[in-house]
Image (cartoon, rainbow, N blue to C red; front, side):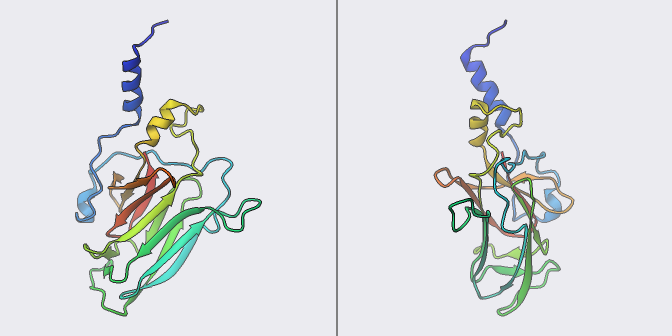
Length: 207
């Protein structure tokens, strides 16, 4: 049997996980994102993960007021509160423009709806195209401690999956555009990943 040198094996593992896609530049017009990236490889819920409390949640966001929503897993035996899955926060002065281009004024409100994928670590935000202030964006955080550890889906949890986990990030796309990687902040201790949002579209945790 042909044996590869150890350094070749490491390079192959890295190549299997690494991507060379451009970041999801949220300052770009949505139409200009069409050629930004390839399809991501989504994190999936582990087979033994508890269901979420809800897979769709709505709330009114008001210009001039901070608001946030958190979605947890259903509690396991012995837990009074389930583990966190997602948190979305809109700072006090973050709302900027409606999807049709109208500027938000203090006191204006918009009904925000989050629809969560039941299998993948993904969420769709509506109204699509809602924009936030450049200086005060919204923030989205996912906790991925309940993700399937077999990241590459080959049926084996091994060093390749550990290598792939180092490339976990949030990805996003808008209507008629391809998925693109976003600047993301990882907290390995909390197994969480966060990013700043400047407009609504669809977002997911991938590698």
